[in-house]
Image (cartoon, rainbow, N blue to C red; front, side, top):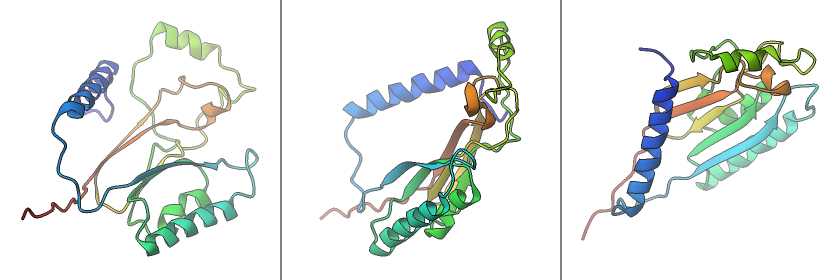
Length: 189
């Protein structure tokens, strides 16, 4: 089975997801968990040198804050980090006590979507001076941290030509994870 979905399948999945969300909004609400599930998405500005420098201390502070929240029992159960390109940025999850950590697409991952004539024309206009022809030097910068077990992970890099400027140096894409959230049901009286 292919690791990546076709464009049609992606569109179908997106429409099905939107339909499911609209349907569940009118359906009876599920039983409330004993403890709410919290999710934090955080762009940590973890760009590598020379685009950013002196950020290692900031990443240590982020990890310390998440660790302190964990000790108080108020940590987010799931954290999605964006722009976690450096090793110091990628250590936040482990340093803050998250048991499960997964990364998004790495620099070597390649998308499988076929290119169209329009895609090839767009790619032909890429500029070497803007980094658009340098290849992927970095991964996606995505990282998911979870207190709950991660059952499955899917990574899908965007097509190599689907970028502009220095963003082309990173292998941007998506990270999907199936997380086993254990929700305790309240006992009825």
